[in-house]
Length: 409
Image (cartoon, rainbow, N blue to C red; front, side):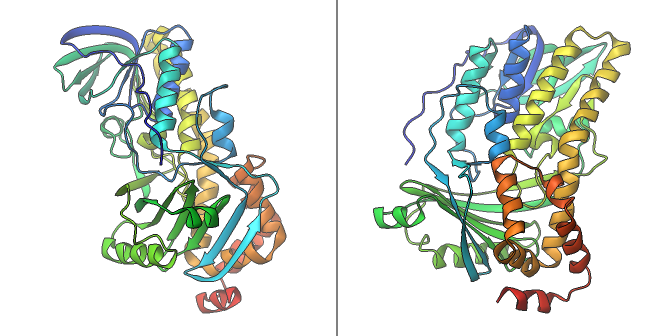
């Protein structure tokens, strides 16, 4: 079980009006990163978080190579396990375990990751106010006004919204989604024998619902396990979760947490800024369509947003729009390209999970590509650009579902 975490540096909230260069809303990976970058650039930066830090966050807590590379150097963060073996299954069948060339996925708790990143933002000079929620947002004459639940009126030259998938700032910007999924997750304490069985090994199981899967991530004496599928059939997803946990011996113990949340993937034409207000991470709906991985997107978009907010501080009104547009182009050229590729992979997977399973478990080149992506040596776009992926995508549009499932047996 995770040890107690020292709360990030906070500032007592007050009433009245105050002015800042940059205000960041949300102290997750995207927001804490944006605040750290802006503060390190010399901006008077305020980081707002509606919950008390540290706070629980529904998340598998697996850091892939792209996430690890985006963390600030020397970040003090406890890693509870590192996955070197990957077990794949097709709805409880055709299970196979493969070894990674270089174990990479670091298993952490989001409460500890977010607290460490928030501490890094504070160390860079940002003021942190937790238990402070945004209640209103408006923009006029080159100034963004933010109001909080404590009756404060705060003003800034730039605002970064990183307040999660239910973001109030995203509604202001007008973020639109192409895919919305429901994830159900439990953090289950396990005995020593079970912990030893899962040590260094994670499970990915392609589920019975379209585009669904279940996962088990080991963290010492706790396993984080859950299922995800398209929003719209929660009863079926709950039934899958119960069956999944039962089959893997994780249904009996009383979970430390048993929660659900929505993950959202943006439409390619969805805005990333409005005036001097930017969105990043989950608030911008920057999430992988297939794996629903969002931490690497949050960290990378947070860096881009922090630099863009810094430029907005000194930008005249005539330059502000170009600065915001530049941020949008940077996100589109990097993370947007990743999301377009992951959307293609998701279409392939949803149409024919059996084919994807067979490729990963029976075609060494396919698993090596996935392993390279997990380690940060390639991207989803790189995977989908290979001749093998293009051929598989073409085949999936023609191969009947029954035939693909037969391949996996």
